[in-house]
Structures are given as C-alpha cells and as structure tokens.
Image (cartoon, rainbow, N blue to C red; front, side, top):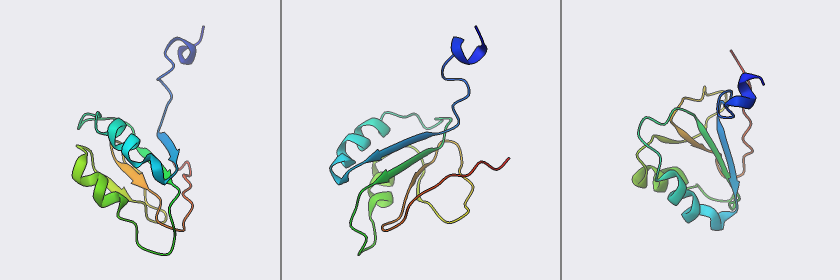
Length: 97
C-alpha cells in the first residue's frame, strides 16, 4: 500500500468548497470550528449576484479565527487563509512551485 492510501490526508494541498447563497450559515458553522493554526488554504465560491460588491469576506472575517480575503488576480494562496471569489468572477487556482 502506498503512503497516499495509508494516509488519505497526506497530499491534500487545499480545501475547495462551492455553495449557493443559502450556504453562508453552513460555511460559517464549518469554518468556525477551524483552529487558528489550520494548515491548508481554503477556496470558497458562492453563487451571488454580480451587480454589487460582496460583503462575504468581511462577514466571515468577523466570525472566524483564520484570515479571510477576497481573492485577487495572480495572488499566491497562503495556508490557513480562506479566499472567496469576488462577485461576477470565477476563481481558478494554478499550480506554481
């Protein structure tokens, strides 16, 4: 048995979550349990109207113990940080080592 099969967590580099606008409370509940030293970046995409500025990062930052940001183009993702796509944007992550 290889190492990945013996320890399924090893090899995971990020957590990615998608939800509808109704998923905000569920995500707050899940992410609210994360410790301040959580070791993986988290990328979250919620279906929201794109005609106005999103308050998601602000809402989550006030309620979580980990840093929260709205992702910016070509920004390097950091372990232990939650990133949201901005309204009207897709969010893609590229491997760059």
